[in-house]
Length: 222
Image 1: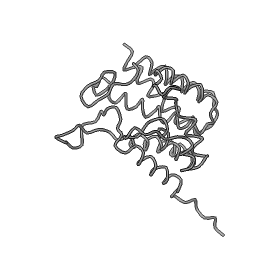
Image 2: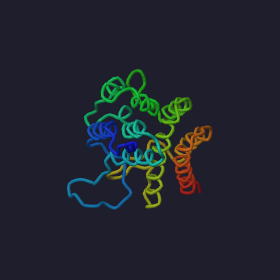
Image 3: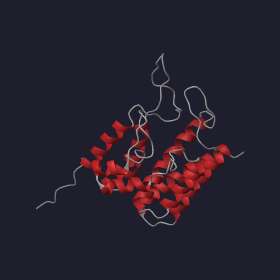
Image 4: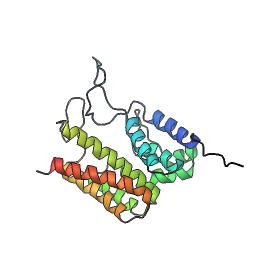
């Protein structure tokens, strides 16, 4: 008797895509580096956040991680970032919506954005807390982080190579929250964490981020 093949469709990934698409609807990345595929006379064309989430989740899937990790990759920004109406998702609500396996992974890759009074924390404070928490997180969470930072760094590098100054505001574009030196420090910190882990599925994600880190260094260190 033949063993049934694993199904190509995953309900938990489908659910994660639905949640991510709904939550991040009308939310956009800080800028774009490609030429606009079409023109709108009334507004600039912006990059939907779901494009970033999809790129991260696809990288995690290609590296060989299972469905719950891919689902968490689609949802890795859902608690960290408010929706277009300013609402914030809680871990409790996310747990009710998709269960603890995915929610716990999202928790491990969510940086603290606000202090106890609801004020936004400084960039460096947020990143240091993120690194500190990720150092004790499981490999599944580190895989999501590597894919996330890889795609962020790749996008930064594509913009820089196109002659776009991503560190300054411009029409239709918001500057990054930290300069090149700080960005390099953060990426290097994530890379160091994965240097200490042993899982073949982390290797291609680590290698990808390492390439983009070096590329960013070449583009921003004179």
